[in-house]
Image (cartoon, rainbow, N blue to C red; front, side):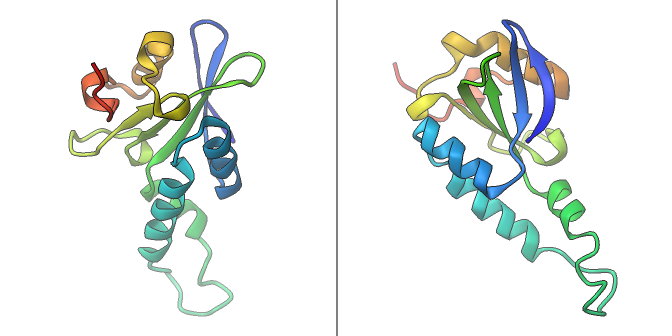
Length: 141
């Protein structure tokens, strides 16, 4: 995992970088981030066009390509490491308005009541707003 930014209340956003991390997040949070991570990873991997065709040099740059092209998968943790929310943001954290941003809490619950300040801090870090209406996919009344 990679540090992304701090949030109010001694909370921190981290980037999920490996399938094993996504699997742990899915299990602990009771949602499907692992499925989305795996799908986006494969899509990024399959889109890679190596600069060299020689087998020894073919995959140089693959990791960087995957990090540039796949969405950002993020986890919000409290100061004790407890998982609080999971987010999927556009590749490189650059919002063009067309990407379906998803932010959910445990069991796909609405994270905004408890974690709204942390979500706002994440938006400020990347330079765009993360409103509930756009980012929480399950509109429950």
